[in-house]
Amino acid sequence: MATTTLISSHVLIISSLFFLISFLQLNGAHELKVCGFQAIYAFGDSLTDTGNAMFLTYPYGMTNPNQTGRASDGLLIVDYIAQSAGLPLLNPSGDKNATFQSGADFAYSGITVLNDKFHNKSNIFRGYVPDFNLQSEIKAFKTHLKSFCKNPKTLECKKKMESSLFFLWMGINDYNYAIADGGIEAIPYLKTIEQAKKLKLVPTVVKHIIRALKKLMSYGATQVLVLGLPPYGCSPYFLTPQSKNSSAVYDEHQCLKDYNDYLMYHNIYLQEALGSLQNENPNANIVYGDTYKAMRTILAEHTKYGIEMLSQACCGVGGKYHFTGNITKLCGRPDVPFCSDPSKHIFFDHLHFTQNMNEKMAGLLIQDILPKLKCNATGKR
Image (cartoon, rainbow, N blue to C red; front, side):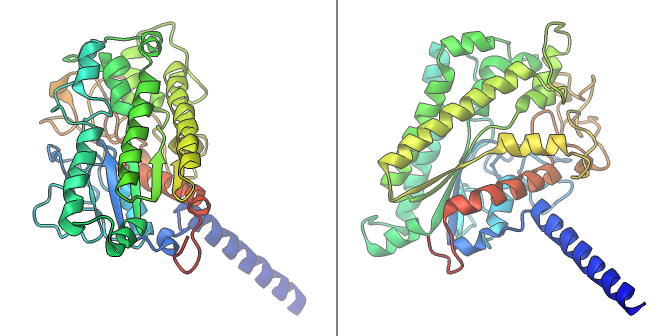
């Protein structure tokens, strides 16, 4: 009887440990705090913007009302990266009341990597956003840098930059405006994927991302995290305009295969370019974050993550995916309904993830990137 009890106790302990390990892995508990980052500087679009654009209204932020200005019901991936690093959530760079001691977020919703000159030349309607792009964010950082580092060559400035993580996640809007905006009535559908390839859109976008990274590294950045693009062929934004296309090809998750293949083309091209940049800068550490793989993992095991709705927006109206393309019926507009439990959805609106999805993707990303960041228990690399 005692032996049976002992065995049962061991089984219970092992089961508990297995559950704990699974829970920690699921929630990204591989803490980035061991890297000793003193600050994070973030660049990107609405996937990373913590409040610079500030045009979003309720129900955005409904799950986390204290965090406004984010394109989600709550926190973003960059927020979870900051939390894992043991840092406060990033203030938007436009916040006049912030001290920015732990970094700043320069991301701005709706913007692109490329500027208006390229889009106009290529006959791509860029949307109703200011001519603000990745280069603009880098210029804003340069101005910000002068506020705490008047001479970048000093030891103090060098240490500040070396102890900072530079986070960049951008590119989807360049492809949205070119090939996906048939989903919004006010923005004309302009290019097929084949036409976008002829424009060499991916090589051009990646070239400008690398150019921006080189500029940041010239200012002293040595720890760089660049995220690839997730499979947005699963989003209401891409799926809706193709729902009447009888020739559209879907994968096992009912996502658009050609759109996802195109975004994977971007990711592969980006990884190769980052590899070359790393070879040119052996003293830097340039890490790629695979959001495509993270999202595919969650799609394949969505019930484990508590997700039921893979492509239907929590907030929106009309059609199979809760998105019509009518700009008066977008999330946040009067009389546009929203679900009671965003955590069961991947997408909060037609394009942006729920807080739950951002948290789960961040957890998977952190597991993947931590070894690549080459951190140790002393916070040194």
